[in-house]
Image (cartoon, rainbow, N blue to C red):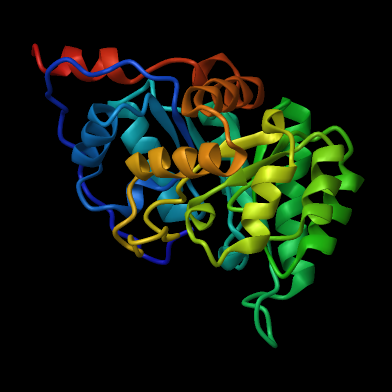
Length: 284
């Protein structure tokens, strides 16, 4: 998730015919990018069908809800990220109940540094409240983990049956496999395009394709030749291409299987495209 918090108005989109595609960015933050309407339009023009745009604190959750009122076909999630665990969790849970997102989160744990940004006890309280609601609503969770794999794995085990994706995964194959065995998906992001990201690449090849989803976490996580905050959702095409090359398979196979995976994870709303909505805007 980005530290860049740009909140902008969202003008109506207007464009010409856009290409159909099955490629889906399973985790990004449109509301952290200046002029998200233009970014969305260019993303669709590039051949990406849609995105999951994620909230992570009070301000971003409000911005996501505003964006979705203007573009209701966009899948979205609402949550409270561990960086903001000092904020109240109750309004976030109520917002999830009121807004009917396709997922909960971005949630998770972050134990980076000698002293974590917030105590592990508070982070865990916030995470478990979201896991509990997600399980009760049968919604998936999009999960963040930094230096907290063991703790996050224990939490997911306590909420057996919760669904979700461990986004921008950078751990070992064995760690990824433990989450997959609990029914979670692994998010493959921009790191897979970097030759030095050997552990990420090893996981991307070794894990079954039917447990992977592709993402950008734009504008936060860089890829080869593109650094934050310049990453955009259309860069998911490069993530998918790197994944196909590493596995020695056709790009179309990666697109088809990861698309099936996001529909299984996020439901039929993830199958829809923002293309028709954008094209309607051009005729108004």
